[in-house]
Every structure is written in structure tokens, then in C-alpha cells.
Amino acid sequence: MIPPSYPASRAAAILVHPHFARHPSDAPGVDTIEAIVDAAFWASLRREEGYVPRISLAFAAPDEVKRPLRFERPLRLTPETLTRVSPAVLRPGIHLGVWREQDELWVWGATRKLPAFSFVLEVLAPGLLVIKHSRSEESGKFVNVAVIEGDRIKVIDQSAASLPDCPALLYPLLGLESQFAANESASVLIQLAVSMREHGRGGLLLVVPANGREWEESILQPITYSIVPPFTVLAELAEMDPGGAPTGRWQDAMRRAVDGIGGLTAVDGATIINERYELLAFGAKIVRRPGWAQISRLIVTEPTAGSTAQTVEPSQLGGTRHLSAAQFAHDQRDAIALVASQDGQFSVFGWSPCEEMVHAHRIESLLL
Image (cartoon, rainbow, N blue to C red; front, side, top):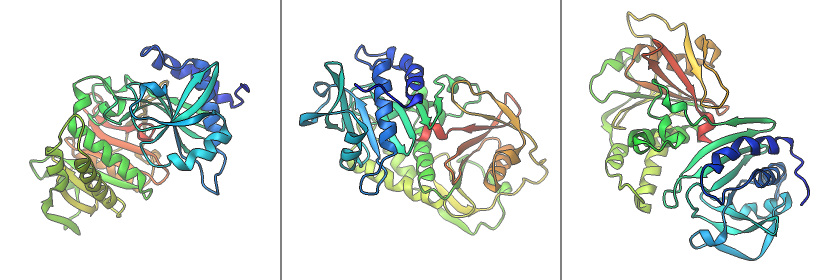
């Protein structure tokens, strides 16, 4: 094989290999990870009929997956190969299968099902790659392990959710094997976060207590787009959650409901839901709660290895959305605020009882 030529591929392979080495014996080695990252990176810089390749590569033997689509003649893993076949696997949930035979890596076909903890690499944009592992064969869900963007490598800190003030939203994002991984509240919020980020216009979502109306003290009245009675479709679907392997009909209905509310966050102002996912309003304007001080400092963290907490002024985080979200979390300490920026940044604001100030969690690396 031609030695990899993308410098970050070796560094990324060394950093993520220990994560996969703790699990199945057929996990990829450092050289294998390096070769897959290298081929995917160079493919991401190419074009296929004018389109940027969007590819998902999974390291799995064809005999280990259910109902694989197998090529009669496997294709050598090269940037050229990946670029040519990328249109065939553009739709979400389809992976090109990669396996090593006779000391060479081959693309053997495609699959939708993967064994638990399979190595997966997604090409999202030119020079932007995400390394993941599959949670289980049936769930179709993945846990981000690292994000590679050009020469920058961010390895997800799997212990980040052990912080005392960590919001429940982060537990399933990090794939923790604990009681929190099944937290349905967090699961729905994750889907909303992804939907908010996808429309690319930026947005602000407030999650307030289901009982009580104190949050209204932080919202300019009257609310132009107040919803009466509350819109309950997402709440009803969450209560109907079949668990285990959900039906296609339920998944489609949930996706439409999530995207419906996620789309409202593109409107100027805040979208407001309660803890039961009942939609209360959108386009709402946040104001400082009467009698409460203006927020002056907050803590910012990112769940990546090597990152450290920083105490900053709210103005250092971003524009009006971030300032409003920080003030709301300061004044409404039993609520949280989710903010998506147009540039892809995503933050969760909540009150930290331990630090006695607002804590902003930067989690865009978990949502890719």
C-alpha cells in the first residue's frame, strides 16, 4: 500500500486506537485507522460531478453484518474509489464496508446494520471527518469518538458527563453505559439539538419546568407567537416511545415532530417548550427578570480531552442569542437554554449550583 500522506491521520489513529482496543478483538489497529482516515480525508477534497462526497466508512467483515450488499469484486480503498461510489451511499444510515485482506484494505460493499462498537468514519465536508462507534446492531445510533478538521483533532472526553453539574443532555451523547443512557428526556433534546443545528440559520430553544409560570418573568409580554393550548404532538410521541427497536412509523412521526419544532427555532427569538416537550411559544424575546442582576461571568467547557474550563464574560461567547441564553439561565435556574449558531457552534446553558454561576457546555463536536 502507498503510505498515508495526510499528517493528521497518524496522530488521530494513535489517539483513538485505545478507545477501540478496549473492546472487540477485531477492532482496527493503528495502521488500519491511519489508512482509513487518510483515504477519507483526500476523498473529502475531491468532487464527483461537482458534488462534495458525503461518505460513511465502517470497519467490519462482510460475514459479521446482516444482509450485506456485497460487490462481486471488492474495491481497493483509495480516495478515487471513495469519490466514485460516494453518490451511492449518500443517504443517512448507509455505510461502505471496509475490511483487511492479505494486508490490504478493501471496500467490500455496503450495509445498514453494524455489529456493536464497530469503527465508523464519516466524511461530512471537505477536511471534516468524524470517528464514531456504533452502539448496537439494532439501534442504528452512534457515539462520537473524535472530530478531525484539517490539522485539528478533538478527542471526546468520555468522562465529561461525570461532572456534578453536567446536564442530562450530555449522557446519551457520550454513550455512557449507565442509567442516564436511557434517559428519554435527554434523547429527545438531542434530536432537537441536531435539528436546530441542521437548518443553519441559528436558533434558541428554552426548556422550562412543566409546572409553574415563573419563566414568563424572563420573557417580553405579550408573546407574539404564543401557543394556546400547548402543542402536544412531540409530548405524545415521547410518551408512546416503544423502546428497544422502534417501529418505522413511530420513527418517522418523531422525526417530523422534532423537525417541526426545530424549524421554529429559525424564527428570530426563542422557541419555548416545557419538560414534557409541549410547545408553548416561539419567536419570544428574552428580558432580564425583574429584580435580578445582569450576568457578568460564566463558565465555559467543552467535552474534549485536554480542554479546560474557562471563566469568561458573556460577550466573549457570541452575539445576542448567547447573551440572552446566558441571562435566561442565570435568572431561571431550573431551566436550560440551547443555542445553535449559524457557524455550527452549539452550546447548552444551565445554572451550576456547585460554581454558583451559569455553565455553558460547548457540544457541537458531539452533534456532528
